[in-house]
Length: 595
Image (cartoon, rainbow, N blue to C red; front, side, top):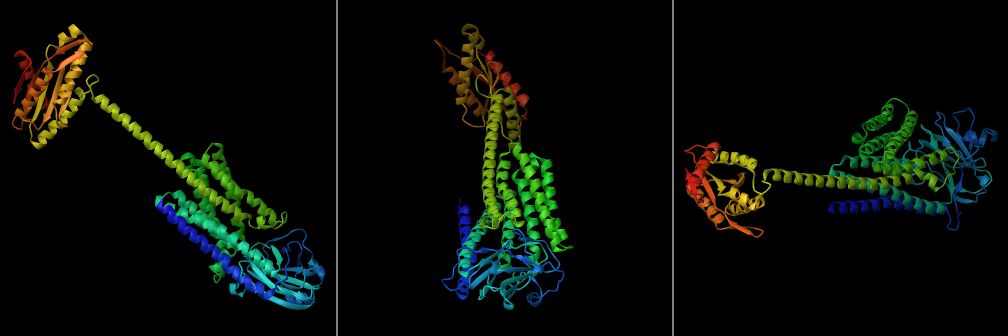
């Protein structure tokens, strides 16, 4: 379809722009930093994971400064964090961390210290050799983005190691929510190479989700099906949430609006749950198939808005906890509802559950990674993004299958209704026709006569009525049998039909061997002409049945109603019947008329 081709073309260019924006800008910055900080030959094959090799200050002093730490505090004040700890709860006091780089036997030269978590309000980086402070950087989302030493969606701090012994990094972190702290130590060239691939991955994921959203948005504008707009809203909210979680929105769109950046995540989480519930209800047609489950899913959608209310009155850390609880409750209730429909052999529910399972599988891995049971790697760090991408693509496919099935059912229903209407028309037609001759029966004639006389009265036109009787028909039945009589009736009906040339002329079987004809807008001369034509046609027709052949004649009584005589169906039939008997008594095979 032309519309689909336009949307796909637009989406392709959006994907290219996304890849160029995320990949090209970042890679250009990294090239300059790599050249500035590292000699060409200085490389390390993999980054150093530092999550389980840092010390956290456990003292009571809250107003520490880096100078106090360097000069006064002893190692006993910095216990080593056991296990792969990377998750920290909110604290009103700043959190101080220390990493002894000498423990890793690093080489001299340029290094990048990366914190792959973009949502830290304030982070101070200090690099110390012995008692000498070498590098200081102040960064975080509550500080200008241009203040960062490296333009990056995460936090990366460059420093140069001159003396390995005594090389130490101190971090001072202050943020209003709980946070994770995946820390890596890179050589600049490796950092550049790996991050370029990672930016390409982010561009593909976010660009693909953007394509899915735009495509279904265009489908909504074309079809006005609500399921498309709910899907689009869900995909866009998840897309913005992922872009915010990875620091892209802050880096490219609102780096100057630092307060908004702190509150946008719970807003996007609530909106994602809201649209997910609406999409689930519409996709599974819960309002028609299961009204009780529909009320429950709408209740979850209303519950998803509670973090937005709390956002106005309580601290962001509390709102973040409420948002996480909303996600948890929505996942459980949504899974149960979809599971109930799937057990009812609902094909769409099974497809939805399959798509939803990718996120259900990813969430435990993310939780286990944050509490230290699973180490950091590409899959654990990007589990949510990968699962959301797979879910959005598969949901789009499932949605297309649903629409295809719905259209097929609609076409089947339309075809069934058409067949039913056709059958009803045939039944109505059969009920209006004489079963033997195939012409109108007495009931149909009565209906047509009412309409014809009403129209004649309205137009002030004359209308003729012809009563026809087969002469000596009883003798045919007595001598040849009723089968021969039926054959004569059918043949005469066919002959009489051929004598009528207008669509609105009516020929009907009036009873037994009698026929009746209505001729609207015909005067007495026209009526006599048609009657004589019929009489001559029947007289000249040989009727054969088996080895037998007979010739029959008819007698016809004609009456013509005019504005002067008054329009009355009973009078017209009465006068025509009187003239028919006059024809019979006058010797048969003749036409008599009254006007």
